[in-house]
Image (cartoon, rainbow, N blue to C red; front, side):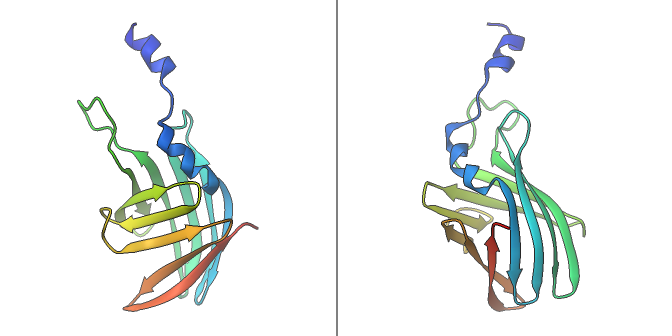
Length: 143
């Protein structure tokens, strides 16, 4: 099989199917926060892209998050965990680890096992957002 043929026959990793439930537009609301996030698959289906736009405590927050398995130079197998990289309009960059099944989505800031940022199930997600030492619940629901 040539490299060209091989590239044409690659299929997205099976573990990514659990993220299909995120695809679409979500309204974000809670104390001091309002806006939307949109999830869509990148061409090829190997990465989910999240577009973020909301206002939190009077400050506009915008950015993108690229979610998928990592496959570094020289690697033959993807990472065991689904990872993501956030790029914000304020110059910030964050890394997250995702775990999802048919019922639950968990997102950790950094590596799996650190403090979960999001734990959600069903068509509505409630995300504890930590701001200046306090925790507030932020709801994400379909418009």
